[in-house]
Length: 305
Ligand SMILES: [Zn+2]
Image (cartoon, rainbow, N blue to C red; front, top):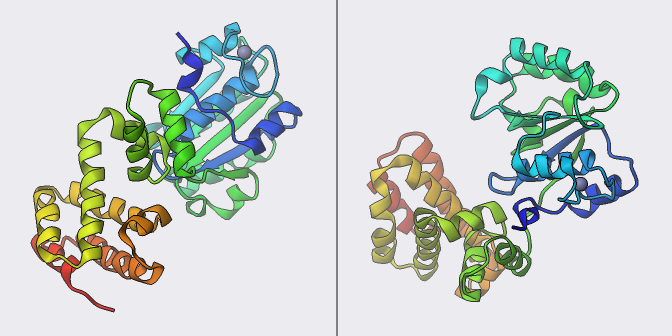
């Protein structure tokens, strides 16, 4: 089985650094949820630990195989959203002490601090010194949804790499590589619905609920573009059962309407798309304030220029 496909390739900037052996020891990968930050951090850890040292991980040596299997003892992955206790000051103090002990089987030790936006300021302050001068053969890879949620003092000590959404055609190709066996039209649809965000595209191809939400967001945008109040009601009403689902629908519609490909399909001018986005943003805001959902759906139908 070709497991290499399970991890993404490094973006050119990181690849060049790895090839030339000048990877910085403190990095932050910034990208939207689903953009593949944790996978990329793992692929980068693989590149660091790979015996062949050829830039990207080879996927075949002992270290790469352990990385792919998720069992390499020199990689510590802490996800602050899933495991908030490990982002507490006491746990990080322990992590910091361990980092000074050096690798156990590989050439380096790699700490992946995923969802670093969940680090509270005292925890971030605790990491400042070690990020500035990591122990020899130790790498820190932070991931976050938005770098401005980290303290400026942290940002000044890490090199930030932002993961932009892929062009839709490239996203469709990547999805085909990762999940072979679908029709071309399905890859294209998934690439459009996920707005070029491959992690989300994979969910759309594999989870019926994600595909359903993507298609509903697309229909919502189409109904808003056509100014069809009944169409808007028909799409949005079933999502009113759950506030979180409703928020996710609005959020996805907001991203979709700004895609040039979507605007082209619907014959929307950029100004008309921006007006739809404003209405969606207003509904998102009211939803956060616990607004009555049927009213928010009605709000989506009101045209205001
Ligand atoms: Zn290797």
